[in-house]
Length: 197
Image (tube, rainbow, N blue to C red):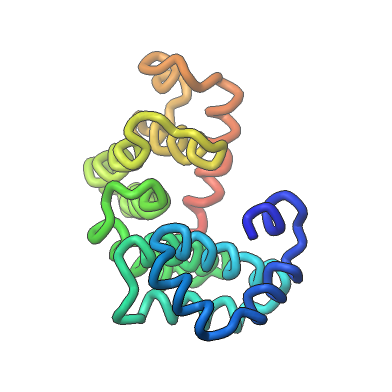
């Protein structure tokens, strides 16, 4: 499903496969799958969104988020995609409520980095730089200091910028991993995201 969605961009195939699973197969996969199961559901959610079927995506995500049998890991994996979607749609309150829960219940999960970043940005927007910097430090903790994917590097770089009051020169002086151009690009994205709050 990940390859179909992220590499081939064949969301219709992801959806078709999901919708043809029998309840028995779904229950078996859900009971054995753990994080694999929830990552699969996150891809189905994204495929529905990209295939302009937001109603089905939201129903799927809310089933996990509001479900009593869902694990905190399931909530953080599917909930992150749900919250990011809500941010893109301008539903900041709902997104932030989801991010708050994720940051509280799964504070060191890799996917929780998104929650910490957005909460740091919200604190920054409110002028609470101390809380903002504390939240930004939590982003790096989620990656154990080792972001692996481009998305993780970008979040980590934006968190670094928050920690130094959005000063690219200061961030260059305290780390040597991110190049100036990469930090400037992410500062631009951060500034745009800040405006959404």
